[in-house]
Image 1 (cartoon, helix red, strand yellow):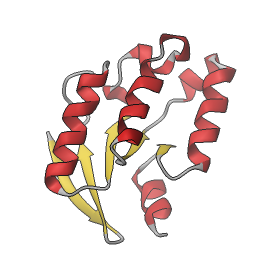
Image 2 (cartoon, one colour; image 1 turned 120 degrees about the vertical axis):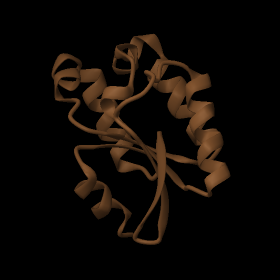
Image 3 (cartoon, rainbow, N blue to C red; image 1 turned 120 degrees about the horizontal axis):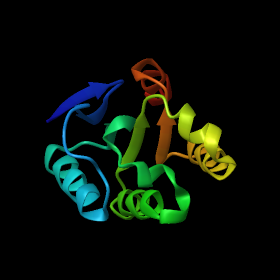
Image 4 (tube, one colour; image 1 turned 90 degrees about the vertical axis):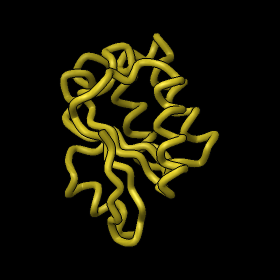
Length: 120
């Protein structure tokens, strides 16, 4: 289930916490298609929707999914607590820090942090 919301004049496709695990590029393409159809600039996906492999950089799942969003110029937000994953991997910690410096991919703790980021 997805809903379109506008946050600070930015159209955002919000994915529900319940639903199929996001584990491959085709899952990303489905969300990108949905976002494009609804005019969303960002897709917000709860962290719990991602397959465990997403948080293990050696699998390349995160890179492949994030690259699809970048190719189609749709922002992606992974929303929620991923501290157990970052505690286990310094590479993932570094990856998250780098992503959060940009304007394409964000790992954010909650909706309030998302609102702050979208202010401009």
